[in-house]
Structures are given as structure tokens and as C-alpha cells.
Image (cartoon, rainbow, N blue to C red; front, top):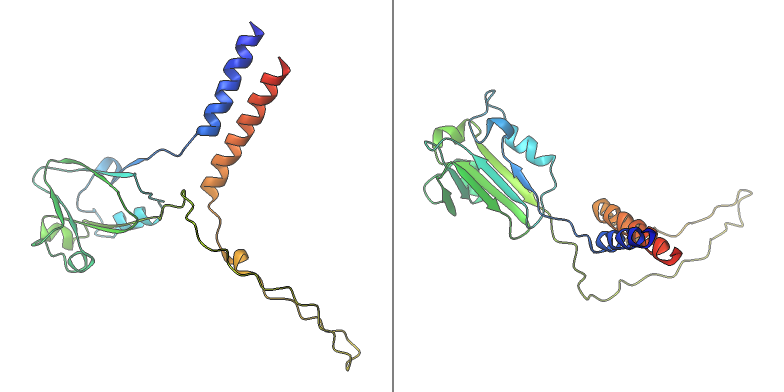
Length: 194
């Protein structure tokens, strides 16, 4: 019986190792849905700025069939131009899936609603899960400290920080890898124990 339990825990650890972030669906406007904001503010954009959209994620627009959702260019977004959309959705329950990184612009198909801020900009993050072959960045040798012999105080000149120190880290990836690594460690330990 104990051996069966250790196998199950081991398989669970293996599943954690293979874990990959799944796509998410975000409902635009929450319970109010896709409609004119009640206070005429840019609530949709404020909401979107707090989110981290990725390729494969989807937006769910829920709206009255008297309204619509238009995907438009940046210029048409700024001007509430409803005449030449990239895509038009009128079914009242539209799921839009992001297939590339970059900005996406949405407005109401009703120009008056758009002018009352029924519009949304979403920025989809670049896919950082695949490694591309690129040459390593050159690393400058670390200079020796320079000491000023002329003054009684010693002056030390530190090397400039490397380019790697300036690059942001992706916390979400680190968390997934950490949980996967812990799960694999626990699973392997239990398998070896029996």
C-alpha cells in the first residue's frame, strides 16, 4: 500500500515538472460587461494596465446585441472611427484570443459609446518561454580598482554594472520552476525511499 502511495506522489512530482502556464480568459468589464462606463472614465484601460496578458490568453466581451466590439488600429481607436475595423463582433458574447504580442485596440461599434470611453487597449507581453539562439553578450573584463596616491583619502573606482544586472526577471516563470522543482524533489525522494 505504501508503495502505491509513493508512486502516486512520484507521478504528481513529475506532473509538476511538466507543468506549463495555461492560457487565461479575462472578462472585460467584470459583471457589468462591455458597456459605457457609468462615470465616463477610462475604466477599461485602467483595468487592462493592471493585467499581464500573454499570447494564448483571451478576452471575453459580454454585451447587449444592440452594441458591438470592433478591433481597430491605434489611429481609429484615438478617433473612435468605426468605419474600417480590423474585425467586427456582434454576437453579444465574443471571445477574442491573442495570437501575437503587442498592442490590441478595441472600441464599441457605436461611435457615441466609444466617445463615452467604451474602448480598451490591451498590451500582450512577448513570449519569453522559448529560447532563441543568439550570440552571448560580450562581458567586459572587470577593471582593477584605481587608487589615487596624491590624496590622503583612498578613492576606489568601481566597474560599471553589467548589462545582465539591468534586465528584469520574469517572476511568474521563477515561481512555476520553483514549484516544479520542489515537487520533483519530493517525488524523487519518496520514490527512492521505497
